[in-house]
Amino acid sequence: SPLKSAVQTSGIAALSDKLNRAADARTMATTPVWAEAWQGFERELLERLLKCGPDDDLVRYRLQVGIEAARHVRMAIEHASKTGPGLEKELDLLEGRKPVPIA
Image (spheres, rainbow, N blue to C red):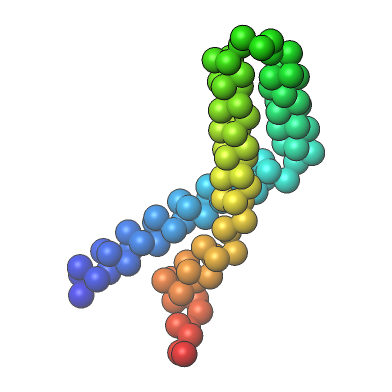
């Protein structure tokens, strides 16, 4: 039916977009510069944190939140870089390149 075809086409387009983003994330996350940049960024924040005096509670808190946020961003991008194979399988099924497995 036309509606089913439109929904399938929309699903294929969405998966293709996700697959492109995963490829971009994989390209970015597998370069040596990636690890070095994150390590340098975290090291800088940690050094600033260690320099905080006893009355620098607000600065210390903001630096801790910044370190935690940076770690979450890094993990999210690295996770996205690993989703490609699953997206490729799903796209193959939707486009009919592979038969739907029967369980």
